[in-house]
Length: 593
Image (cartoon, rainbow, N blue to C red; front, side, top):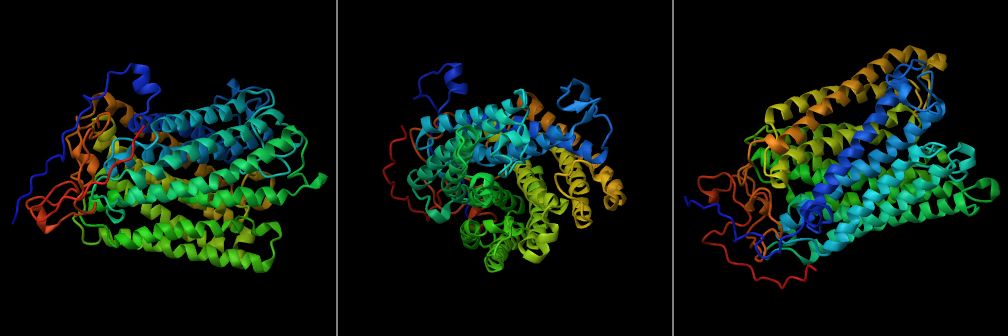
């Protein structure tokens, strides 16, 4: 058996880069890794904001009419004698969804990991357009600040729901939020510009800047998923931008695109929003799928089961995502034939999604499993996403969706996909690539405690929502106890609220682990997870310029675990050259600046 030396592929370092000031290196940086870390801290801030809003929603639903703890510090326009007012409650519902979808989950999955991982995983020095990359971050931050400022204007935050349905959103005088409704529209236009700039950069980098030997089917599934996600974002975000511009015209110039009272069409907003909105669901979940695939293969010490089918499943999900937006609108009086078409196309998405789930299970089957924190969270992602996908099949069937559509059942489904799915994947990805970002390891003990408590309280919070939804509790309701038929369900609402508070509190374990490890975490070895990816050939943290002035050669796929050729190791990195390997012919790299 041949023993292979696992050495880094080329000399690395940043000696060729002139020294930079603190502001140039860490604030106005064009280094893809620093930009990814900037996205990470800003997105975690907005995740905290969204979580605080959710806790207030759960207080109102669990304990309607009781003073909110600490409510005395809120303005009288939000609370009365400490009790949440209906006007403030709909602001909470609107801004919780907006912050979580647009400013927490999307930048955490795409902004952070597309920026940080793509150049490292494909073996290049930086993004194709580093300055555009820098501006994509600052525009995203600007959009978030504009959205957050809606809480501080005299008439309060927007009150039309996070989907901003017309005519309520098109006529700010109806909701009483004249300024903040316009700020919402402006923020979405700016955020769309940021996302498109970033996505064009990711697509260009992956197509043109792969290292010699990094063929399409040697790319890790995380890169494939980010590539397809970027294509979705380039095509979907401009639709929402255009809709937001039309909405802003209605709000400021007196046009009537979406006001049916003046000849507009409220349904036009729904079509435009959900034509963006359903690809957005996959923008939020495909990167999670890719990163979970990398981590599951590593934790199983096996090649990913059905690599090619996984790639085609990602492409299939992305394609089908464009032709199913109408399933959000079965209640809108849709023609039954059209509704049936959307129903069938939605059910078809279950096929590539199931392919991925069975491939993950096949990867773990009889693997030499290592239950480190990233692996535990990746398994949590698969299990929670599966439950969310199964409840999605209910929603796809028109006769089932109609009675369940405006109930807590939908809230449960959405959170099983976007919390149970996306956030569990992030709890896997953050500790996994933390050494590459900061040069230190997060605590395994705290990480495992965080995982198990999160998994338990998460299911205690969201699974009962299926039950109260089937019992008829509406979503966005202010006080369930005013309806006699909902009063028997109120003990479940109290149980859900206590579970949600516990779930929120547990996240401070993660925050402590994340921040404490920055200074006191164990210094990370070169390849702490014994992985095959190119990024683990660099020191921790990765230097500016990555491998500059050289690039690594790639000799094989990303999942060569337990390969006989690996000798006394159970992994065979992409950059290790065996005696039988031939050097790839290097393609001329396009200029990076």
